Amino acid sequence: MTSLGAPILPTSIAWGLLAAFSILWVALGWWLGRHNRTAEDHMLAGRNVGLALATATAMATWVTANTTMTAPQLALQLGVWGMLGYSLGALGLILFAPLARRIRELMPEGFTSGDFIRLRYGKFTWRVFLVVSLIYAFGWLVSMAMAGGVLINALAGIDYRVGMTVILTVCVIYTLLGGLRAVIGTDFIQTIIIIAGAAFIAWLTIDKVGFEAIHFNLLDERPELLNLLFPAAIMFLFNNLLFGVGEIFHSNVWWSRAFAFGRNVGFRAYLLGGLLWLPIPIVAGFIALATPALGINVPAADMVGPLVAAEVLGLTGAIVVFIVVFAALASSLDSLLAATSDLVTRDIYRGHIRPRASAQNQFHATKVIVVLLGLLTWLAASYRGEIPIVGSLAELLYFTGAFVASAIWPIVAGLYWRRANPAGAALSMILGSTLGLISYFAIGFYVAALVGAAVSLVVMAGSTWLWPRPFDWGRLARDEAPAGGSRA
Amino acid sequence: MTISAAALATIVVIATLVASLTPILLIALFIRDWKKGCLW
Image 1 (tube, one colour):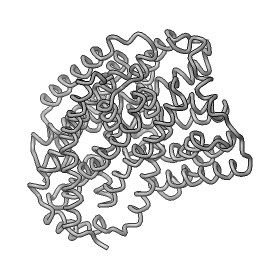
Image 2 (cartoon, chains in turn red, purple):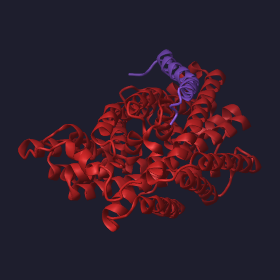
Image 3 (cartoon, chains in turn purple, green):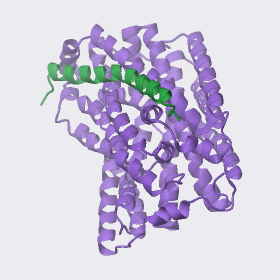
Image 4 (cartoon, chains in turn yellow, red):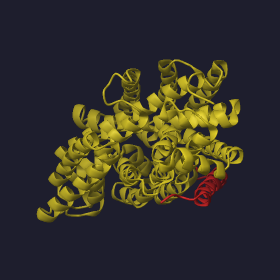
């Protein structure tokens, strides 16, 4: 029987893997970003990323440590619907495909999601959006850093803060060196590693345990996990669907890619990336259902994936999981660092502090902000457990659900409804986030996004119907055209 | 209502098959883009 009592990977091997992959990512980051000369090169990789790299980066960014560690956790807690519900997160990528095309058409020179909200809805809504977006981005960054520390500690016995610091530092360095080009280039390799590793563990679990044994033991010990009418799990399924859509629709991680992908690439890349992402949570999550058959004691739900892999595959399993989760962490952390630093640079630094900042000023500011974001994330993740809301990975992740789901309708309406009301957009985010948070604490983590999205829809649709405000789409391209040193 | 072992197996095997083929597809796309000079 395996438990979390002792590390399942020798510390020396873990340090070797950490060193090898850290050197690889940093070297690649430097190499890919060596020709970056302008803010546009650094922030948007030259705006002409092809289909292969675009699809891989969409997948890699969406396959986070939350996918590789939380998908098994949710399968363990919510059963079959837990892993199926998580896989519905793919709909966020798929539904963003037409939005990516529209964004590129409306704002060929755009940089961030904040640019769009400011031009479409005005400054007040823009500021509300920045609060929502930055809370989410920071929550995601901290959850990634925490996942890194937890994983390294559980697998190799390396101190939580040391492991978390190493992963965060590596990602900050290569994002700093290569910008989005480094992020996208490393994402391609990380995608291959993550998916091949997860599939490898799944095949061996199927081979060694078998579905009959898994099913028989679950029926005996945890029959609710096989129940297709498990109420909390069904609510989770819809909540996760909306959470995923909200995350992708509003976050600059996905908008910056829409601006960076080649002109006819965005739609196909997001669609293909979503379809290929769909099975990953099932592959990563199903192994948790094998715990009763394997007789594994799971003291911490978010460590069930690594525990099963180590039980089934021994040292090889521990090594594969370590590499997969390190790649998953890096692929999301780098994207978040790059996209959030772009958002802070464009919308806080240039938007609020130095409106006349030149392209070169922004280029340097982006780099400083990446380092500052890394430091802030390190501070928050260092005090894991001492901050009341920062509990398990899933709890932290879904805490941000209320915020992101409330941004879905303002984004959709802003892109497609000519008469969308700007004040309604701000109010829908404020009320959606507030009521979503109340439901998070009053009912449970699995309803925050559901309530946030529902309230936001009612306010957005109602305000637009009652007080329509016609908008000229051409303003988005005109007002964002290079002028006043905004670009190189 | 409980999911059967066969249904569970079908879902997981299909998902694992697709995941296994994905790296091959991505590498093929990469080679195609590289040959056409449109990686970036």
